[in-house]
Structures are given as structure tokens and as C-alpha cells.
Image (cartoon, rainbow, N blue to C red; front, side, top):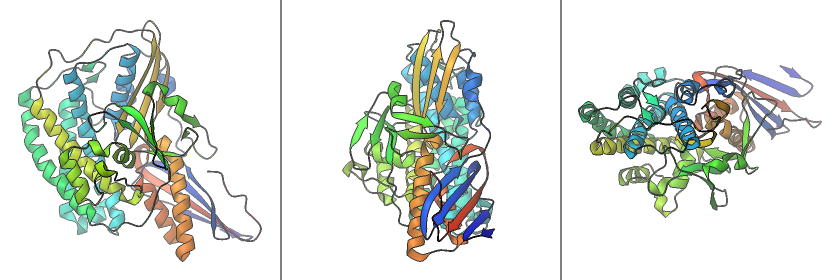
Length: 453
């Protein structure tokens, strides 16, 4: 639709993202004046209906927030409530939680690599079309995802919304004999993960550089997954850390008119969490096999300060993290001895607890306040995609401006670029893959009001 120098282009059906949303891009006289990632799905009110529930219930309830990464919600909920109650679980239980989390990392990262992201690099519109031309590769991805699902089924009870997780541990723990068949499956998965690294390393990557601060958990002697200290890597290379309990003093959420999801700022600045942030902050703590994979992927050696800030290359980091998660699962299985009991008792205590873990898409924070009877009086969940929205909009604005200044693409080409840019960050808008509408507003002559982003 065109009127008085303004051009509005509506483009439907961006596939290969989780959920429904829209992008509005404003261009005035060749200058991008605003980019808004509009999330219009209705609020789901999880924090509201957690109030009044028993302190044992959030791990099961919050798992339903997402069908792709339910373990992240369960683990963050357990960590926060156990923190409120002053309970520390058995180290073997911590390892089993990490093993379950490895299963989620494998299945989620591989889902993104093969079914959502790779088609962009190979000129395909969908995973189905990709399977017609790259059948062996897609079958490899499905085989890898099956290995991750198998871990979740054995440890968690099922692959989607696991039912074996409980506060303090698990309802039951596996025997060594039950884990043994998984080891053979994971050995094949490690080979497949290596082939994934080699495959994606051959893709062609557009030049791009994200300026946002990076936020991820860090642990002293391992690559942080199920716990750690929130650590910030600023755009100027400086690092700072803060306790999990101070998370909301640094990460603040605000409503924006164009989205039903909250936007976040880290100390007032745009920030990004997820694979790029983890690799930049904790890459030096990857195991030798994952460090070798990073070198083979062309990411460099993080022990020597290698950092990746090109969002198009995030697929490389996810592939490296897949190698890490498979190898870590094998390590835990080899060392496993069943604990004396499957869980630690967590009696209710009045207090406030904080927990954070690394979901595949980034840092996930939970806070719960409990009364003396163990009832939840308040709850706060800060998912990674809500934190990343500002960085995604910033990234879109820069990429679109660069493209307009370099070759002035038509709307179709600019739309395709924006779609790719969004998928780089693997936003989880909701639990399902659906579509995104794109609106580009072009104006010239008298100044446009633009949009705030």
C-alpha cells in the first residue's frame, strides 16, 4: 500500500522460528530510523498462577512454559526454591541434572542447526526442501536429536515436559545398567556432532558484528550449564560479575508498546545472552574435544581470547556446544554411581530464592518468595529471548542500514535478510514454530516519525 511517499510492505510467513511475531522496519530517505520486533501472542500469566502454589510445584508447572527447553525451566525453578530453603543437593544429583540438561542442549541445538538455520545457508525454504537435496545431513541431524531425546526420556521420564524431575532431585534415578545402552548411542552421536561441525564450517557467512554486551553464567572449573555466576562481557572487552541474587538489580524489564513480551536492559544497556555469550565468556573452560571442534569450526582458541560476535556464525558455536554436550554426557555416564537416595528433602522455609541456568538460548533466571507454609507468594521468570529482543532489534537496524547503503536492495531482498537475522538468534517466541509478518515503511521528503525500538 502506497500513499504520499510512504510505502508499506506486508510479508507473511517467516517459518523456522518458535512462535508468532511481526517486524516493523522504518526507512526514511535511505536511513533506517527504527526496527521493532513485535510479539503479539497473548500473555500467558505463569507468574500469576504460580502464586499460592506449594513450593514443590513450580518445577512441574514452569516446564510447561516451553516444549523445546522444559528442563531449563525445571532446573532454574529447582535452583531458586532450594536456594530459598537453604538446601544443597547431593553432588551425584547435580551430575544427573547436568546429564539431563545435556540431553536438552543436544536436541534443542541440533533442532535449530538442521531444521531452522541451515536452510538459510543452503538456499532452501524449509527443512523438508533441505531433506530433498541433503538427505544424509538431515538424517544425521535427526539421529543426533534422537540421542538427546533418549537422554531426556531415561533421566526425565519423557522428552517433552519431563515428569521425573522433582524438588531436591528426581523421583527415581537410573541404574548403571540402564545408562549403558545410552553410551553406545552417544558414541555415534559424538561422531555425528563432529560431522555437524565440519558441515556448518563450510557455509558462507555474511559479515556482521553485534555490539551488545554479552551475559552468561560462568563457573570456575567447567563450562556453565546448570549453575554459575552471571558474568558480563562489555563491548569494550571489560568483564564484571554479580551474584545471582542481584540479577534484577542489573537486568531490568520494561513494557514496550509494540510487544506483549517485556524488554530487558543490562545496567541500562542492550545485551545478548545465548551461545555467542557463553563462548565469549566461558569458552576457555570447554573440554579439549570441544576446543578442538572450535578450532576446526574456524572460531579460534577461546583460551587465547577468541570471541565470536558475528550472529550469522552462531550456528558454528551451537555445533561446538553440541560436541561438548555429547562428550559431557559420556563423561557423566562413565563416572556414574547411583546416589543413596534419589532426592534431598526440601522442607519449606519462609524466604526468597534465586536460580539461574543456561537454556540453549541463554541465561534463564527464576526468583520465588515463599511463606512459612511453603506457599509461593511471588514469582519472577526472566527468559533469554525476552532479554535478547533489544539486541535483535539493534542487530536488524544495523544489518538493514548496511545493506541499504551498500546495494539498496528491494523489499523482497531486504525482507529475506531480516528473516535470516532473526533466525540467527533462534528466538523462542512461544512453544511452537509458526510465522512472522514483516512490515517495511519507506518514506522520503518530509521527515517521518519513525519508531522507537
